[in-house]
Length: 327
Length: 102
Image 1 (cartoon, rainbow over the protein chains, first blue to last red):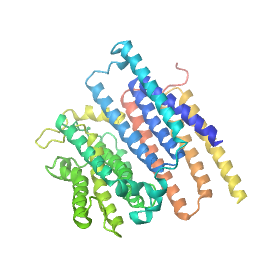
Image 2 (spheres, helix red, strand yellow):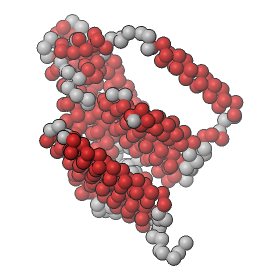
Image 3 (cartoon, rainbow over the protein chains, first blue to last red):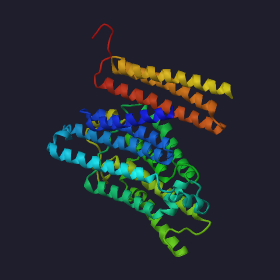
Image 4 (cartoon, rainbow over the protein chains, first blue to last red):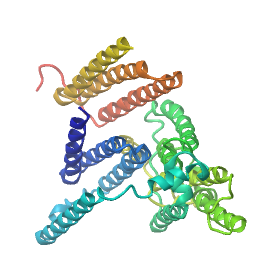
């Protein structure tokens, strides 16, 4: 029965991927993409990787979906519905890309077939060291203890991403939709505090069960996007330093922890014995704030300017357009 | 325990029925308002039945409570989103289809 379920899931995933790339209507393609993300999350659950499933559902489907939708709205507002990429470029490069991708696919299949003969890898070693890692969720142990250097660089990449977006252009603020949609506020009043609470819960539970800074950060990032849609916190966002501190605190705390552990134990990110859990939680809490702000501010698509600029011209027009497409 | 399992199965079947009717409504009904109506109403009942079915299988009261919370969140979100989509369609001048018209 479950075998049948997996089969249907796989077929639908491939179909939706095809639809999201090839639909002539970009809006419909985007909806397919969001559904695709949700089904991939289900697939991760079936592969017993709930941590990845949480991240995929929140980032891959929710936030990326919101980003693509807002890009679509901006494109339409400027009157250029994108030309179908299929007609751009000749037919030969496309075929070449197809052949190359097929070759890559076959290589990966070969690699997968060969994997089965090999032993378990590092799973047993990792699980044996779990009690000393400070957390009891193996995924968090890998991310923030065994391979914490990688995670440090990942947090740095997120900061680089938002720096890149900020240096390209100014933010386009979503219009204030509170007056035209009176029911939005009551929903936000319920959803925003719940999401913040859920993010903190996911961070906390991440030490022992699926969850952690990235999943919690994605939830809080979603709350951030809703907050922007509801028109809150504009002054705070335009503040000179506040957002910059929030964006960089994850990396700064991580670097401080690296320096601290180096002074204490002589090795980068080797936590003092017995206190690993505390270090991990402190780093994760700071990382969550940065991840949430990065994901939320990416939605604005540029830097929130200070000096009398970001006030949207044509409020009502912006408002009605955003209101429909933003969700 | 077997009673609970049978009850869970029945509830899940009923839930599937409501989900399917919601989807049929989405595909077959003529205008956006009736489609929204079919989707949000039928799917919320379907999800409610699913949640009750899962509650019967829950191992602790905290799980039951979490399921209730999830259902409350989905209900408030879907009701609001239904209103937002309907309101926007109305604003853009979509007229509800009258009987007799094509």
